[in-house]
Image (cartoon, rainbow, N blue to C red; front, side, top):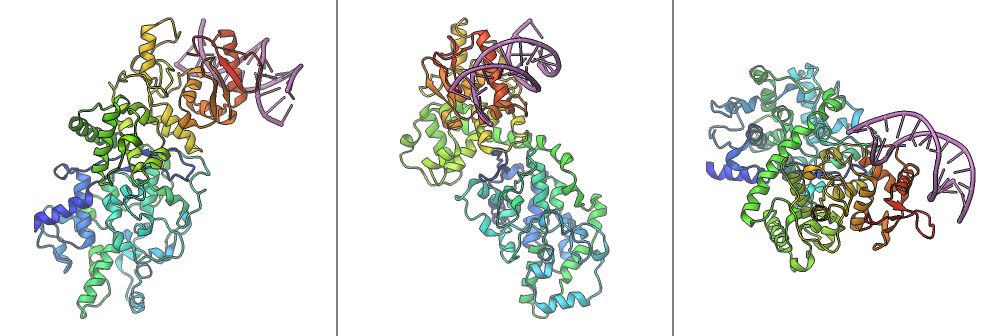
Length: 565
DNA sequence: GAGGAGGAAGTAG
DNA sequence: CTACTTCCTCCTC
């Protein structure tokens, strides 16, 4: 019994991943996905506490406290190690008619009123009104509304890996039943999710957050999950689930008055606050604390990356492949794809070898759209996982590009001073996720062939070499190198820039604005435009890096030898 | 008007 | 010092 319960819990929690990704239609930066799988016997404190909340919120029996029963209230505080869970209620979490914030994020006050949101009988409402105001009503604390993620938003694990992973993160996904009865006609956004988003989101352009129309709050479209720390968990108790549980009890026990007595008793008990020195979670921390919250971003990434690395290490050992996706051979790519499909219980792909003939380096350059085109059901998940692997590898301090065979579609350039993907890329403001995709796909892709070439023929490419292939975010990249990057990744940058005569090094900038913006972002020059970029290009005339084309054409430039190699 | 060419001064590593 | 960046004027298409 106890084992079975615990197994069920593990199933709930696993895979427990931390995902943050911008919705595809959002103007937010390109997706940044990090995942993490919790291991049953290595639960962190946060996970343990979260488990407890699951038990408490669902009214189910906790594995270590068989005597725990939904009622009476005293039973909620068994003398076992989980006993403190019943204390994890903050009275301020309760709704109150006065002081409900209604302005920010289009907060929908009626939805957070327990009686309304839970479709309780009218007499219950009347009863509530007639009863003396409970203690919490005068607490003056900010209200933390319950999570409001309707099922329909996360339809199935396959429909969107982000959504599914988000849903699989126990705190949201396992409370669906509780939220199904929410039928608010207007959008809402719970404060917990707001804080999560603030925690996770890179800085966004001012208008980017709410541009996208949505049946729910536009802001909530880009909800991100994150590893919750203990304070977050304590603010995350599902009152709705608890209330629903009590409703069920009321139905099964007709003699019991449906007056939420149990809940009230639970919530009036403040011993946990004293015991754990807890403070109510103020709404200001959600709304006004953006700057502070962002400060927590990097540790979260580090934590998630750490787990991603561990996960990747295990799979690398199992598959006998490099940790660097760029080093994979086609057969290793297939092995990784199959392993990932199995890991996520995705349908096995037929003709995998035919659909993915690339080696790892080429695979790493594929866009999510391309993955989804080849594997509609699982492409997005595979792409997301690959991004995680790339990030995990790029984050390794000693990660070195592994030399590999040259592949036909890839350019030899730029040489070894290529920047690796840097998390800073995701922190800058971004208004075009496609551009971020270009950067994410181009920047992190080392071209070790070039390093080999440069080493073999040191005079062939007059480029300074830097150690480790990392240049701290790409600010040291030369313009001609950057242009070669773009030219080498046509599948990513599309028609912004293209070769006219590859052998002569003649290329054309088709979208000058876009190229300039990409260049400006890479160099952290927000004011960059094509005028300036072209001036820099013209400086290359003197330096012998570029030259005017024989027949002058607009937006057409030519690399000099040996830069046109 | 957009883009090309180039001078000149400023900036950051 | 280098490699841009920024600003500018003039010219061409």
